[in-house]
Amino acid sequence: MPIAGSPKKLAQDVAHGFQQFTQASLRQYTVEDLRVLLFNLNFVLRDLRGKQIPLEEIEGLKDKNNKIRRINQAINIIQSFASTKGLKI
Image (tube, rainbow, N blue to C red; front, top):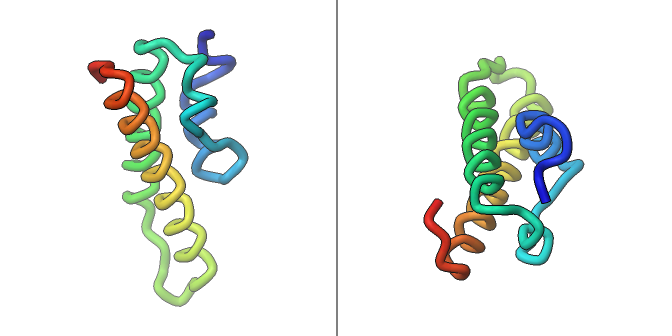
């Protein structure tokens, strides 16, 4: 099943915690869809890491770190799923 909507928006939803991936939910995607997801997750991750937040804003730093954690977790789940299925991503 192809990705519904914009892949970049899906990656941003993962960062905000609105969407999460599991091994079961990834079965619906093709190899090309998984490649597009990984590309967009890495794109959003680079944008987040480049954001400058003043050290005085503790909540802003926590929010940024949580988004980075969610994206890293999604990337790890997708890579793990691909390796167990023997897919080349």
